[in-house]
Image (cartoon, rainbow over all chains, first blue to last red; front, side):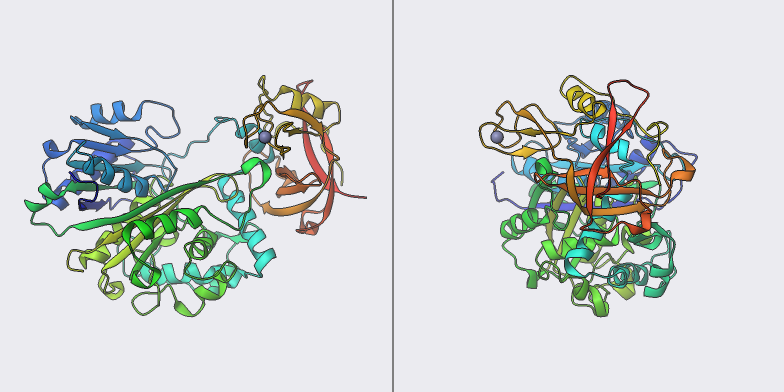
Length: 386
Length: 139
Ligand SMILES: [Zn+2]
């Protein structure tokens, strides 16, 4: 295949469960794989590429071996690059490149986990843990310090952050699988319990069991499929970290991944009809919007006011499934559902009241923590009839 | 307000050959940073090789003074004693430059502000060669 040949997402499946006490995580992987194959109209034996991350939960096993064994796959390509929750957006880019290079024709990307019914505490695992865990460093706190600094430097308010949750909740009311389906107001958010100043409970995403899967295919495979496919137009990845103590808590690595992906796709902001933006916390969305260049640094608060993010009429409809904030954040990793909802929008299969006229969409992941290390990954996707 | 007598039951770091000098210096009442003799970078965490140029770095004593760069009050925490909540999880920008993760102690949590002047203090652990550097309001 040529280096610029088209690669498509042919199958996308989000597991309907949000609480799975009676299933294993591996079982969920198999169920979402089956779901994505059914969606694409492909057979299990068609799969010759495998991408996943976080297997097994919190452990250091041998993910490609464990997965290929359990799922009974015969693959010529495997990739278990793990940028935390943004991994599955990254896998879209890596699968595209593998297919272009002729390493495989049908690449399966899976995610599954059960943090809602089977929470595990992690232990000292990395070099950095030694200097962070003694101080009570947890994901929530690592995002809260980013929010605090953003508020300090730019005057961002809790009410502005709340607008992001409000928009997600407006979308979630139309999603019968969403964990939280009731619309909320700005007041509801800022009056919800303070969990890590300045973040309230409703600034945080849900905790859900479940998963999702994608199938990426070559042009040849796509030609034999009935199913409407979505093209991978552009991709960019970057990592942000402490940088020896020079960390800037108000910026994410989206400042790099965004331009890479937009250049790769040959698009500009005006071309984007829909955006899936990783929403582990409201501050994640606000900083990402700035860093992707939808507004100037520091003006994210103003940007999200007035329903900018609300489908179908806002200027930049986002997370129309209700996002991680209201719908689903399976395995504490939201990148998969970001891609799935972008695919739904481009196929015209989003929930009716929030379907937008979308030809070009982005899916952006932020895995890890803004307050320490994170992977920012941007994918640009295009609809079939654009 | 006062400092805890010992860091336990809060998590205590397992020192390794690369980091044990940092923790034992803390046990002796000194906050150490790394400084690169080649490019001059002063940094934290104390990795042996400079993260900018891979030169073998030297140890350098920090003044212990800094300002709060950001913070959060963690209202719940499984590793913390109930009567010591909220945890003031913070970044302090040291006088020498690096922003370091720490806790602010010896002050009412609601009084902590971005920009406030702080200075280092050390809390012993049950391990002789390990103490935990924390920050308290400057005099
Ligand atoms: Zn150097």
